[in-house]
Each structure stands twice: as structure tokens, then as C-alpha cells.
Image (cartoon, rainbow, N blue to C red):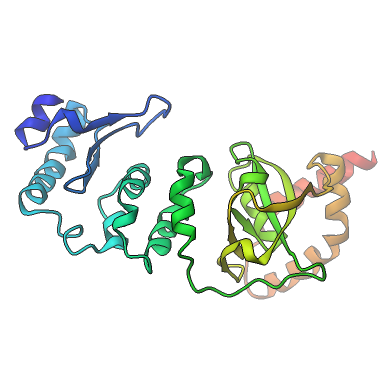
Length: 274
């Protein structure tokens, strides 16, 4: 690898490796020139197939200067030719160079592309970024003056008392908890409006609310039914008539029957009452 990199004007000294990652664990990281690329798959077969073209293009960028970094087009800089794990690394070295009216949006552009990333961020970086909040709507507090928030907790989630990303809608939180089938709980909490950094209302934006670390109050887990066969029957039974009614309408519009789900329901209910 050292010979290949040297041939194209790069140096093995800029290669970083994270032994804790199973794949995409080795990168070329040239902070000064803003050039990053994945070398974890730089085998001979891969290099002959696509790696040579990639390195030739990057070599020209090294000679000409990174055209995204020079005019400081931050959003494009972190989105184009920047491996996502390296975006965190680079931002935390460069964040004070970003204008204060842009620094939160640039950080958020990286943050929202990551799952379970809270532990990656230096607390001093977050404190600086959060001191320049964006101009977003304010969430509506309840009668006690606090905002009720929800978080879908998974096996890889940070501790709720330190989490910074929440939702004002339990449905969004549940979706996140079940996204990778790793959900363990729906957490409910409250936060003072003064600790809210940004709020992105609407279901499409996940009703996401960014809060300062360590400002969450009254944390508790929702009392939810476990997703086992017995409880599935209890939950599905009230909706069966709606399924049947909507199914008839769907057939009128020409949709074909998808029998697998209803066969499962039929077999499940038959087994439960036999």
C-alpha cells in the first residue's frame, strides 16, 4: 500500500486505522489539504478495478488544491468525497474556522447522517456549536413550563440523561427504536425550553429536538406491551375490521391480494383459540 500511495503523491503517514470497526476501518486522512478516502479495501483486485481511477482523480486534486476547501463551501466539502467517519474527525479539528452563522448547520448536516453518534463528539465542540443555535421554531411547553420529549432507545443508544437528540412525537421515537430491530424502550422525559438548541417540527423531520447535554428532567420508560404472540393478538384484534374494510377498497382499485399477512393472522388466531 505504501508504494501505491507514494506513486500517486500520497504518504502512508496519513493513513489512520480504527481497530474497533469491522469494516471501513482504514482511511487516508490529509487534514491540511482536506483529502480523505477509504483504503480499507485497497487490495490488488480492488485497486485494478476502480482504485486506480480514484487515486488518479485525488492526485489531481492534491496538485490543484481542494476546490471545495479553498472557497470554504462547507456543506459540499463534508458531503462530497468525504467518508462519513472522517467528517466527524475533520469537523472537530476545523469547527472554529467555520463562520458562527453556519457552524451549527454544518455540524447538523454531519450529525443527522449518523446513528448513535453522541459518543463521537467532544463535549467542548458541542458546547461551542450549541452556543450558535439556528433560527428554528420553539416547541410548545406544557402546563408545567417544560417540553415533553421522547426517545426510541436501542442497544447502541447513549444514556438518556446525556442524549441530545429527541422527538416531540412518540411515533417518531418508536420508528427510530425499531429502525434496525434493536429497540429496547420508549423513553419519556422533559426539558426546559431554554435548553432547546434547535427544533425541526413535522413528522418528515422526525419532530426532532436538539437539547444541551445533561439538561433532561423526569426521565422514565413508557409502559409498553412486549411484542410477543399473545400481545400481538390483543393489539391486532381491534384493527381487523379496518383491515377488512380497507382491503375491499384496495381490491376495487385493482390492487392484488397479498395473502401472506392475512394467512399469518388467520393461523395465529386459529392457534390461539384452539
